[in-house]
Image (cartoon, rainbow, N blue to C red; front, side, top):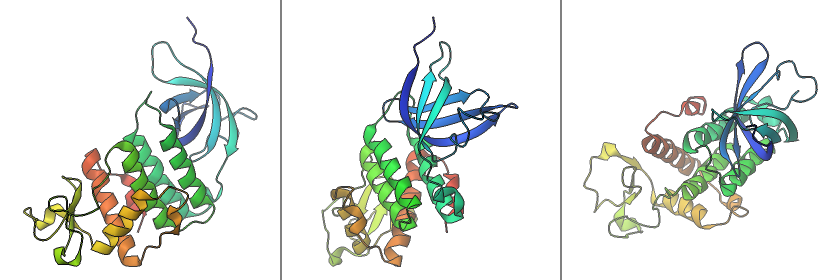
Length: 250
């Protein structure tokens, strides 16, 4: 039995060649979650797919699900936004690639989330329009952890609730998912990520603000470095794998 065709907004996370003329495309869709499909003849297409099946592109895809495989057949793609600056500038490309790689590892098939889709679209659009790179990447991840159910506890020490200079130096325990003050720290220093109180407060503020207001937050270079180190370690520890796109980001 042939399943009826479907359509959905989609953001392209990854593209690879398949044979002489086809492409394998992995997207994230608000309803279907991570979706992988084959676009037959895409490398030779002069109409259906030309300049559309590119990483980062925001599309509306028309597809047909298979009976015996989770891979769908992508029949048509309509380009909604191409975000050309992400492919024209290496620094923007590498940061956008990180966001897409995180979605590849964090999301599943048939587990869509409109908020995650909108967050990724916001971040890619921001990077394309010239937003500050590391701040956008940090804000994307702090909001993503919320949506995934792994919100880091940054409102105070996870044990005693201390949130003042008397508890310094503070560290972030990736295994426990929260801030630990100097008085409550019982683990090896190597197991924790250094995190100043000012950076913790800034990230906690980002957690509480709606997305349309978080770009008002200003990160010093010190807070940027600490926040990026936290995001890198926390993602890797939770996923239990290396995120290769970090290698291209200073």
